[in-house]
Image 1 (tube, rainbow, N blue to C red):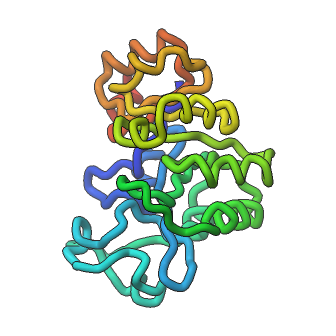
Image 2 (image 1 turned 90 degrees about the vertical axis):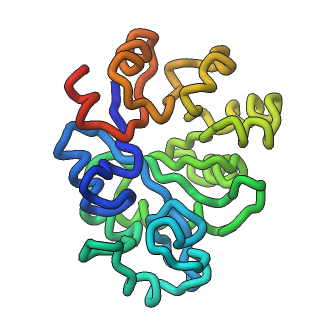
Length: 230
């Protein structure tokens, strides 16, 4: 079973950074899940939130700052900041699950060209990573334009309600891979387990149970722990 590190391994390092990704791989992760936005000037950056409050204590929206402004920011107590996706492609050879942050929890959409930019960068570096999102539209578009890549639909209770159960089933037929929150699995057992990757799984007993049921992988905050229970 593939262990995919959720934003890396953020124990002593900051999530979604090169140190957290390297730490995860050194501690048994097979692949990395990360999140991408665009800066104000269109650079693809690796960051989860739509604002900078949680990690930088700045009352700014992520996409309101240019890359020149963003790259000057350092995480509190660290000598590094937000990386470009291109930096990750250059330095991390392992498989990536790149989450497009093109839709917030209200359903508002952002970055209409983000999937084009991500796949263009991936092509430059000869990568075959997995493109994922809570937003089905860029995934469907990407699969039609670049069918050689793998695409996956993230799902939680909010997105399942917002998109609608019947729509989700329709989208999954077009997208292929599903990545549901683990608590959703009892409601989604009709889906093909061989194409389903639950998140976030940190408990060894749950990990073993999902492995026995035939799921090909899980996304975890604690790749270091689960690696001991393969």
